[in-house]
Image 1: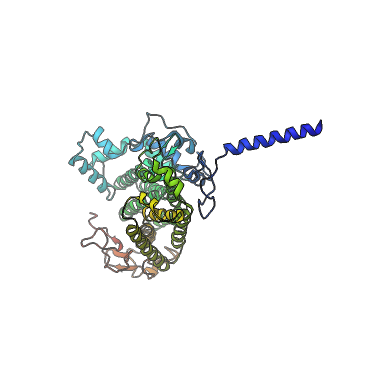
Image 2: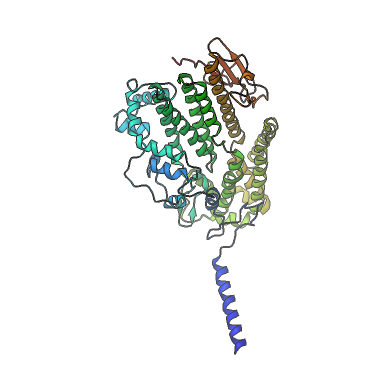
Length: 522
């Protein structure tokens, strides 16, 4: 009897295991670091759920209490830029959607239309230019009453946003649209709050320079720090878009810092305190970290999408919903393409790019990135020569593996971002930051001595620990004092000394420049 019970129990356990195995999705591809990069989670059809993998990675250590985005969405409301986010987005954030009505941030274009009753034409352009002016020069409410009214209307959401910038983490879930068993790719995930952060940056800097114009320098400096913190937080998102918006936000704060520095009547000790606070800000993240994860996933995911939907998957890149029924091409591509070579090839390219982006020496890094760019151009040329017609023509030739390799090459040419331009933007940001440190040290020296020093070495160690080098020339920054000011600059990305001519000069130059007194500041 005991033996019979044992046999029956064993059979039951094996049957339960078989049922569990049937329910467990079987992977569509060989799982591993060199193919799918991550081994899960898998969806019901056996494909990697890359959106879930990205969100799990970026939310490590994040809670609703330490995530800046929880407060930013409290400031923006449920529909920044008119977008409606899927329920999944707020589940990943760990919060309920903000209520439909509340004291939410109103961007200037909407405020101008709804409150100021301006047309969509030239008047709106005029007030946009007025806002830019107020973000770059000290001003008073009586001079720009419309801008002052906009800031007054946004007082409560700006307080919430300022509190958000003091939080330790920034996690913005990526939640592409989904229909039943028909997900869209990662790159279709909406990022409306990211663009709204650009408007926040303008509000913080405009209010800072309003306060500077009123002599409220402590309050002005807190707004400028909030803008810097906002930029550093946004840049830590999962996408290169967030990195670039974060860099742009920090640049807006840099410009306003110099206006503040010229106007403020503080003593050297107070200027030094500002410099210490700037240097305590968290550094900008590396583009390599985003390339190594989210951007890699986007390319791998599209390879899987082609297996899933056939060539029509490429239409999904623009956010179109996949067809309810799969076309015959989808089944043919599943049967006649081996995607493993595509996945391996995408990973090899991502590894090369990431490794080059992590090189600390800029000269070496630039050499490697230029070679990568040249290799990518050559690959695109070969693809165009080999594939003069639709992707479906692949099925009429070659082997399953060669077809997969060709699809991988197409996706590499189509999906990989302009990594060298992103890195140049990051380098400019770092150089502008270093130039700003020197400008604050020069201001402190001027407060002590009533003049600017003859050379930058006079600033160390009392006003600044070390004079940073020019990242783009590996030489000292160029500094030219004058009777009442100075010219300080880096030669910029092109490496040419253009005598301090920057993007805003005519003729244009590429130098990263600080002039004191500021041009046309009066």
